[in-house]
Image (cartoon, rainbow, N blue to C red; front, side):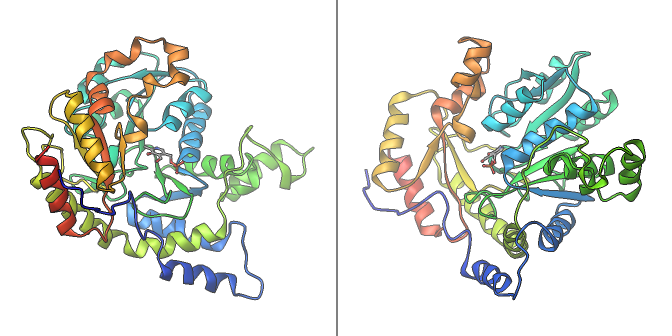
Length: 393
Ligand SMILES: Cc1ncc(COP(=O)(O)O)c(C=O)c1O
């Protein structure tokens, strides 16, 4: 086994000197605005244009975007079931629970790592309010057939695209396919505002509610003068500046996030092209007898390589992890969010110890999958060294 020091972190140079200089320029103004304002609005518009949606609302994290999305759903159709996979992030499940919905889990498709469309259809009941599709590590989770079927049945499609900026379904960007979508701009993702998240939609009502929920539920945050007036007229006993429509949150960003987001977005497409090339190299270099290489790469856009053993094999898993560690390659077992959420204490205490075993594909990646960083500056030579090393284990 090679013990070469590959010096390969999960992410490198995601926030550049150029980005920081733009922050410094902003701060160097005589009286720079720091709480959210023009620069946040500017980034939201640019992001909507890039994604192909009408509206975007910047918040302080991807988890906050999840929370507000399920809160929005609660305001539209309270109570009932939300179908989602147990592979994603704790905040997907937490947002469902915290807003009074019952999570209904389905397994994932091994090639997309996203919800298995047939299982989603099979689990729909009269109580289903929404499907939360999570696009895992840059692979699109949706099919046009599933989108059409949910639409026909009047079930809301929510997309968590926190790990999939720039991935597409038949040329349409994920995050523009459902009623509401979420992105994360945490450091290790495709682009970063240090911490940050985005809620995106084409629905003006969803947009206005998201703006209010972001800021204490305050009506003055709505952009529609008519909406503000209707609240004012209905509540003449209240100071119009302090009308709280919802019991909500403060998950606002700062202007610095807006400056960073706009600066980062300029490089996103070019960086994503490099990431696609890197992933192709990585999967082509792996031995398909040992590792899964047939992921649904068409339209994918990953910030991390998915390394999944072809078969359950603890000995090989341990050898892979030891080799990665000794070569100084950072990795995370379980793919997204540490793997099968149903194995986590917060869900075991609700659903018991056996529920986690009902989702074999998720359980396989939980034990035999990990991800490795895929950042723009990653050298082709390192990818070749890594795959050669992995194939020799
Ligand atoms: C699928 C998914 N959803 C939500 C989140 C939460 O995003 P954040 O870390 O910005 O809160 C993450 C975090 O990485 C994620 O991977």
